[in-house]
Image 1 (cartoon, helix red, strand yellow):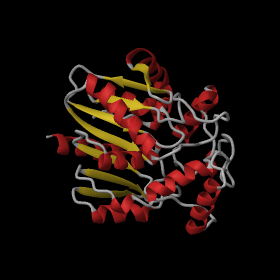
Image 2 (cartoon, one colour):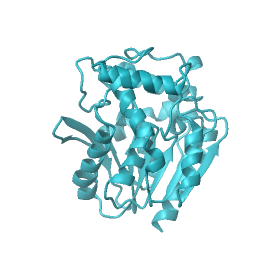
Image 3 (tube, rainbow, N blue to C red):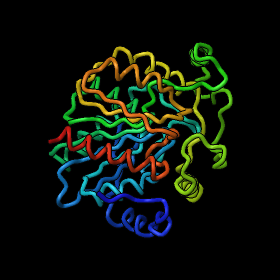
Image 4 (cartoon, helix red, strand yellow):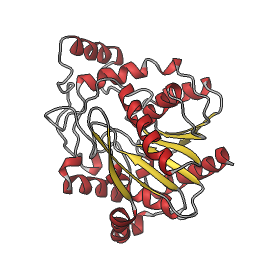
Amino acid sequence: MFYSNESELKSNKPTIEDFYEKTLVKSYLNTPCGQLFYAYVKPSNAHIAVVISSGRIEGLDKYKELLWELYNNNFAVFIVDHQGQGRSYRHLKNKHKGYVKHFNNYCIDLDLFNKQVVDTHWQGKKVLLSHSMGGAIALNYLANFENSYNGAFLSAPMLDIYTKNTPKPLAKLVANSAKLFGFQYSYALGQSDYAPDEFSQNVLTSSKVRYELFRQTYQKTPLLQLGGVTYGWLYAAFSFISSVDRLKVDTPLYIACAQNDEVVDNKALYKLTNRLENTVLESFPNAKHELFFERDEIRQPLLKSLYQFCESVTA
């Protein structure tokens, strides 16, 4: 297998950009609420498709390295920017505000993308790959929508979240109250427009080169920027989290757990693994939240696990 590495990432950037511009097929999918931006690529000898459900604030522009890598390893790849982020439509006048009316709306979009784009261009075996909020969307989708996925690889799925210095019961009460009194479009306490952290302060990755490339991408293309969450998004997220213990999923799952995650609460990942059959969990030592953007010594074992999982569920 081919693995992209940090030491050559900057020198490979022109090649990756050329792949993005000339090889990746990009377009928009119409929905009743707006257009979703998506992309796909199919190597001639691909036998497995990977469909990516990315995390909050993310879009396919951030995943260029991984898309290029998967393509070079003969995977067909499909990815869509979720509503409210990336190049897809946004709900509010202030485009920085993270908002969704119902968490299930993400799944409705994913189902439409799967039926109208993925199934149109690919009829073979496929794996749903996801990260963080995208993992929550993937799990909810598999539990509630008819699908033909052979397996799902969930990287640090958002099955519960840390609320920093606010106790979770209080955070839930505030989100519920804010929505009840019509403040669902307001930023939650402490949230603001897009404001990148210095690398030394970030909780996402310990790879400086990947973090800096991510921030440079968003600095160069402001329309990709997304700020903090609104009370409406928080209410929708807590509503999903409260349903996790009732979700039934028969699809084989692989859960990648970041040992030093400060974004999602890993206890929820272990709880789900113990409850569902056909589910395995692997913890990656010293890893921060964004496993696909971590240092090579963390990221490469993660990708090896991904490739082994894909082969095991599609054999």
